[in-house]
Image 1 (tube, one colour):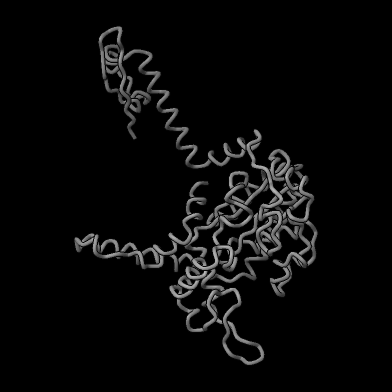
Image 2: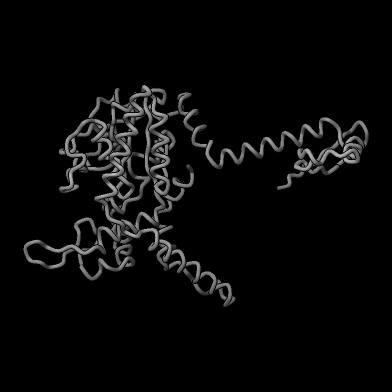
Length: 361
């Protein structure tokens, strides 16, 4: 990598001298002839400017690959968190998902989003709060049902206490699992629409109640499922569609509170979740106990969960769009042929807010 800067010195008439700052910082570059050239062409201020430029570049890389999230948490600790309103959906909703879960022993707040490892996280929350049934292999509906899972939600607290939890970063950690919205749609489609289910009484194939379409035939086609969602949103709004397909930005008021949450990428779930637990504002033994409970929960979920191959399906959608765009360019008629009808393009439009939020991590 080479980083160049323009340097000038008015006192000796040298203007616009280009310096290879990267070479200047290499030990092998300081031969006697090079040193003589440096004395003739640069001043101490010019070398310092190049060093500063290298430091800025290093900081930019750090912000891109890991420090950005930490700096954001620091800014929250200085009191920049928004106030929770009694009208916020995360406080007044009665839905199964949408209000953050309070894991008091770990001082952890978790925003659950369907198809974003929410079963694992709710089992972990139940395990951490001593609720029975966290390792039940029976109906998973009890895990997600607030009336049966024994978990405490933000909406269950007095407003003053809920506000304190959402504002305090020194005593509470808030976390949310985010996922590539195209992969998430693929996971919801494969699980709730395409996966075969049969009526126990009649033996006939039925469609899961969470699938947007009710026809067994239509439920097998992703384009028809998305078309139904698009029509529903156009007539009734985003809030009317099933939670498994609803944009992630609509849960827990993430549009308002996104920056007070530590975001975990679904693709790096275990690694990043362990990192969150290790930094919880609790005693060391509590963190160690939390890590043990998390590992136990992860191992259990791996035994009972099913693989939906959602990444592979999303990759096929993206590959189809890429092939279409290449064909347009090769044919020289990019203006007359459109790829907007393909699944990847339609999903990007449908989940545009999620894409903006996710890549803002």
